Image 1: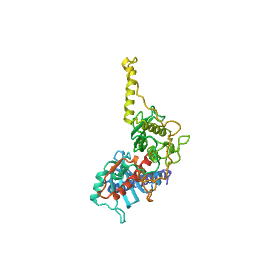
Image 2: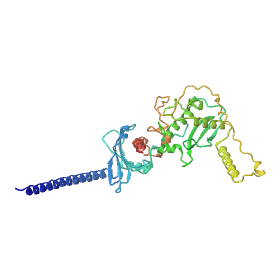
Image 3: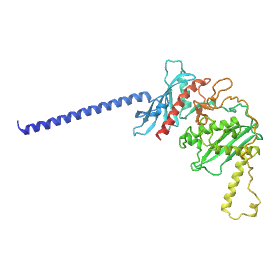
Image 4: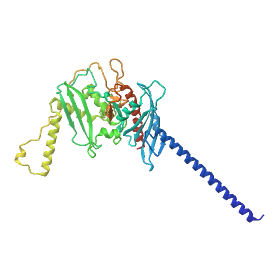
Length: 408
């Protein structure tokens, strides 16, 4: 045998090896393609009624470790690879018993698209097809988180023995900073006084560029701080002031922080200043309508002065509206009576009422009421099963909120 024979034999052997490898790789690729196609067909058969998509991908994220009730999450995509939304599987114990749901949520994490209950042989709540249709109709495209409408409390949330501040007149009073703070928001505060007591407090701020509020931006993730979101902390602070009545009892330290309200880590200096201004206005009966009217007149006058440098004699006869100086802005707080024992009917998370029941009137599923975006009537004459279903939705919301902030 000649060298050329062996050379040709080697070439033919190499070609055979290459063809064999190519064939094996092709078979492997085809097998994987068929396997993936079969897997996607199974996903479509299982989840298509919740959210039809061309491709479903299991979401692998460490955020799941923080949400034990969320078992699996899939992201759904169309033919072009555009994200359509998420499929979330939740299993949890509720006051009504164990419940297992699967739902679809929009790609923004804002809306619930569809939901179903996975019926299992247990003592938990069960839903007929007719009942699920009623709930789906109410929940279709609802913004999350969501609560049963009857959970909304209109009455004053506290019955306490903290005495009110002296000299308050009934009405709604308002104060606002003249300039935006460093974060670009202009803070404002509003209190409502009834029977000489502060029964409602609202603190928020408007972004001078987008004109959205700080609370909404904190919920959407546009405005971020350490600890709980700003809307949650502001809500807890507002509720605590309704409880104690006096801003001095918020125990603000020299650094502007307070350590007596669970979950509140923000600087409350601006809040205290604006509340004190509102209290001063209440003592002089300078209502919110008067404040808005006077400041609107002042802005109109400033605009007129900008366009007309030399004022007319008639204009000089109309002085600027005099805004009363708040009586409580001084360093010495207004005198109050000593507080006696508190009896809370329904307040902050974890507060126990007089009968020992754990009351969570200012939150739903651990979510502050200020963060709830939709309310539904639920099933007629059966709010407990509706609340159990919504608890799974709110658990999914907690995961989605953290996940989207995490990946963002």
